[in-house]
Image 1 (tube, rainbow over the protein chains, first blue to last red):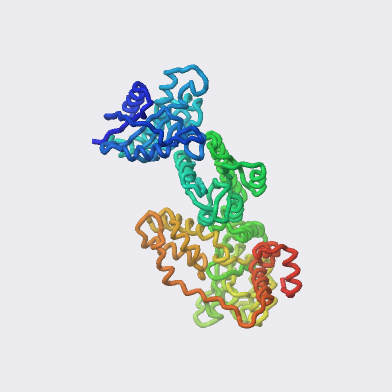
Image 2: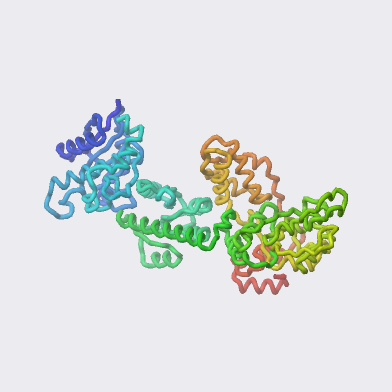
Length: 180
Length: 452
């Protein structure tokens, strides 16, 4: 039996991890396991003041549980890839590991008052988005679909917390998805 | 429709290359990467990418600007985005002056890249749609069997469209397998005669007496075996087109007969006394150098000038190598359907091998090679191994040796003469090929008394 794993780095609050795990479990069905990771300080880039998502994915591959079908990590750290100023998350397309950053999903990042409801809604959408990539889904042209590309939180807010019918059908057709 | 568009990311830093490629792949694009300018140009030779992301600073003697210039030489319409971590106004101006579509500073905002790529792809989609619609409008679909992006071939195809509805005689010259009949059919199909017959006669295939009867037909009893009246190809072509292939091979007597037909627009059937008028348009083709044949006294000059009203010279495949990948993919697409094989692409190794081959048999040889490879291949992509037979069948290229006693000036004269012949007297093109400016070339033409 293979499980979908949702892992959290050390600074992530338990409630946030639990909420995301529950949402992923509801969407993908089957048992979803939680996992605790340590710090991702090794991925810190002092020049940019951010954390590289590529070393984080490498670490996840090293820590990949034997009974995992996919492993999605969440972190409070602000992530980047070298060519971009930031990423909300990154996943291996059709691969094993992915990561979502909560940093820019919080209102506080933009100097606004904290709003837990908005934050969790964005976290759910991004967790579905990156998990969708793990199952081979590409960006969707349907703006409301969780798989549509969002480069700003405004775009995340416009999306639904669910896959569109076409992406959901693609997921159902994915034999790997059915094993989970 | 993103999957139709391919993107090439060029950066010597692997992590930079791969992270941008992975990010673009999530958007559905097919993305290739190249670690150097040289690799990028090599890849661009094999495939035309919709967008090129090129890093400005790369080691190895070929920076982003040089890479961009070489890619633009291969694909003048290429959309190239220069990326740099060290932006200065000067480099930005140079990049834009040399034809970069955009100049961006890394790290870039994801929204910026996303908007940029979407904007370029939107324009590409519109351009493609526009080309298709325009082709439909100008009936260029009639010549769709001629696959080429070579500038000389493009000019030929444009000329075909322009002359299609004229009655003037056309002489098509080119090596065997270059597609002379295809061009003749293109001329026929693009003009007013498209609905009329297209009759092809191979002059090399028949003996003189038979050919005369083939051309003009015969009356009953005109010779032994002529049991009934027979219409000749000129009559059968009626108001259509008669294509006389291998015209350089016809006998002196037939040359006279043909000249008479072209002059009088009428002829007599063999053994007949009734004059038959000719309305067909004559398109002739030959693989021999007819001008030389005239100089050697083997071909009548008056017939040559009658035939050569509009001259088309088709370049051999080795002089338009950029068409090889295009043609290979075209044949795979067509033959997959005809042979019922599930083959959809030609691998990079195989393309490299095809590009390196000399193709003495031209497009026909390439078509046959692709068919043979498809018959024996096992996967959905043709690989280098599927074309192994090419290495066995290829005759070793004769080693080019400099004749003893040749001076640098002799050599220069030979080179300039050959280049001008190859460009059909186009001085601008010849100067570009030779890497000198036009005024220098004119001086050398004068100095060496080279005929143009």
